[in-house]
Image (cartoon, rainbow, N blue to C red; front, side):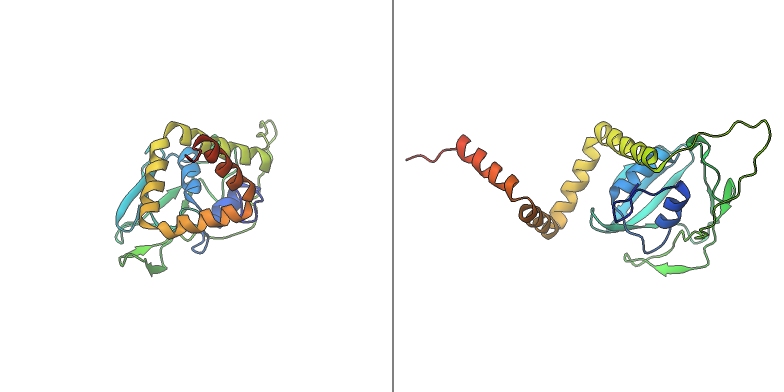
Length: 215
């Protein structure tokens, strides 16, 4: 899990706080990693269609509305207007202290109109930056300390594992998005070619060798 600057998040709490803000942007890798870490199935919708699914529904399903492109977008949580949600944060498997409590109540006082035209609610979590105090108890075994580098490797491993076991999901999502937004693909190719001219030259040279022009 990295910030936009490329620096990994130091703690799970900081990552959760940042990704819960309505103006934080990310890619599908964020949902892919969340599907490996949390016991939920994440269904991602865009333009009225279900584009991809990540994770296992051990404790329910979370539905997200995706806006933007696959490299930089935003995920809005879709919640029924008449439903009272309780967001259970399970951190015991990650050996981390709780964010606030084991079960954190999330309020939905702030409503907003999504780009698709429906009224929905956003999971705007409390951005309390203070670190929860941990009282030391005599005779209690201390938890293993996870550094930012270890956490980064865990997320990278989870993303790589899912990509290897579900390659068709990523391919179908990329193919569908490329068909609907060809200009994004063209801009990305143009930018990459400008930044890596040697790759383009090697590809042209290899193609020329394999397909010589007939005299």
